[in-house]
Image (cartoon, rainbow over all chains, first blue to last red; front, side, top):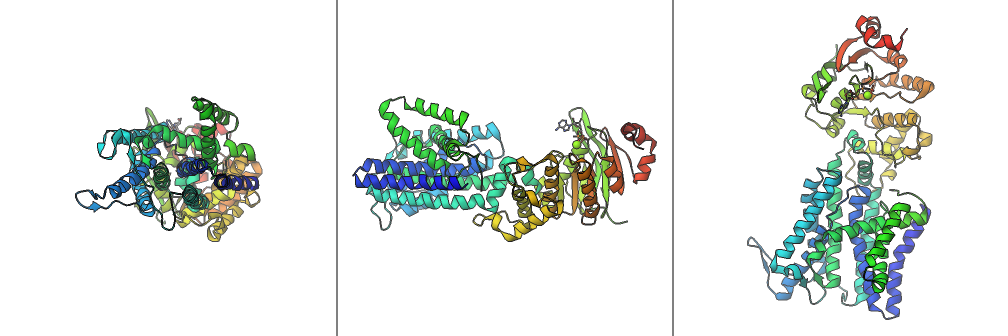
Length: 327
Length: 251
Ligand SMILES: Nc1ncnc2c1ncn2[C@@H]1O[C@H](COP(=O)(O)OP(=O)(O)OP(=O)(O)O)[C@@H](O)[C@H]1O
Ligand SMILES: [Mg+2]
C-alpha cells in the first residue's frame, strides 16, 4: 500500500514535470501530448468507477465521451455563428465559456448514463457488454447521418473556448487547467471508493447476494455508479474536443470505448491511478511507436497481451507487487 | 400462544419436473428455535431461499411480521428484518473481515448513500460492526481478508454480518458446517442465547446441535414436511425414524 502511494505520486507528478520541461525546452507539441494523456486518463478514470470498482464492463463509454464532445461542439458552433439553437420549446444561446460547456456535458452524459443504465443494468455479463456496445453504435451512426453538425466530417471550432482568468490558447495554461480537473476528479473518486457507497459497490461486484442480504439493492448501487462514471467521461469528452478544437463521430466509436478499457487494464484494474498510468503509457507508446511503424497497434497489442497473461495487476501491480485492492 | 413472526403458507416450488418444495406450511414463533432437518436434497435450502426472497414460490404465501412479503425482493425483506446466513458463504472475499461486517452495519443504518466520508472511519458504523465480530469471536482476525479465512471462520462471519442487521428473525442455513466439534459446541451455546433476541429458523445437519437447541423440529423429505413437533415427538415418530433419523443411527 505504501509503495503504491509512492508510485501513484510519482506517476501523477510525471505529467506536470513533462509539461514543465517541455515548456522550458519550448516544445509545445509535447505539452499537447501531456494534455491529451491527462484527458484520456480522465475519461478512463470515469469508466474505472463502473468497471474497476463496480465490475461493469461497459463497451459503450464512448457514448458519454462523444456526448461531452458534441455538447462542446454544438454550443461553441452556435456561439461562433451567432445563431441561437432553436429547440422549438426554448432557445439556447451558444457559448464559448468552458464552465458552462462542462456543466452541459456533465448533465447530458449523466442523463444518458441514467437511461442506458436503466436498460443495460437489468442484464449482466456478455449481454451488458453487448447492450452498451449497441448504444455506442447507435450514437455513432446517428452522428454520421445527421448533417446539421458536420455529419461524418465532424465539426471544427476555430478558437478554443475560454476559462475565466486563463488564456486557454496557451498550451501550458490549458494543460494546467486539464491537470487541475484530473486532480480534483481523482480526489473525489478516491473519496467515493472509501465511502459507504464505494464499499457497497465493491461488494456488489464480488457478491451481489451479500449486498441484498444486508438490505441494499445492487441495481441502484450500479445505476448510481454508472451515472457518475458517465458524467466524468462526458466531462473528459468536452475537454478532448476543446484540445483538438474538433469533434467527429469517431469520439462515439467502439474503438474509443475499447481504448478506455485498455488504459484501465494496462495500468491495473481496480486501482485509482490505474487509468492514469495506462493512458500515459498509451499516449507515450502511440507517440514513440507510430513514428517507427504504422502498425504500432500490433506492438501495443503484444504489450497488452503480456500484461493480461503475466501481470494481472497491470503495470502498477507489477511494480508494487500486490493484487488489486480497494481502499 | 403468541402470533407467529414468520408464517409459510402452502408454499410450492418446482424446478422442471422436480418438486423441490411441495405444499410446505410452517411457522416461527417469537423466542423459539425451529429446526428444519432432512436428508440431502430434501429442499431445505430451497425453502430458505424462498423465505429470504431469492427464489419466488410457484404457489403459496409468506407472511412476515404480520404482512405478506411474497412479492418483495431480498433487499426489501432484509430491510423488513429478515437476517440470513448462507449454506455456501456469500461474502466479499477480497475485502477484510471488518469491511464485511461494516457493510452489514451500513445496510442496517441505511447509510449507504454517503459518498464523501470514509466508511471505515465512521465510528458509529465501525463500532457496531466490531461489536458483532466480538460476539462471534472474530475480533482477532478483523483485518484479515475473507479469502484467507478457514471455512469455519467464514460461517462465523456470516453470522456476525447477520447480527449487525439486528433482525427480527434469523434464517440460518447450516451455520455449524465446517466448525468442528468444539466450534459446533460454541455455536450451539451462542444460538441458545440468541433466540431471546430473535427467533431462528435453523437448517442443520448436526443432530446433537438440533436436539440440544430446537423448541420445535420440522422434518422435510422430498420437499414435503412429514412431521412437525417437539424434539421428543420427532424422536419417537416412526415415519421420521424410517425416512431420516434411522439412517443417521440416532440413539
Ligand atoms: N436452482 C435449481 N435448479 C434446479 N434444481 C435445483 C435448484 N436448486 C436446488 N435444486 C434441486 O432441488 C432439490 C433440493 O435442493 P436443496 O438445495 O434445497 O436441498 P437441501 O435440503 O438444502 O440439501 P443439503 O442438505 O444438501 O443442503 C435438489 O434435488 C436440488 O438438486
Ligand atoms: Mg442446503
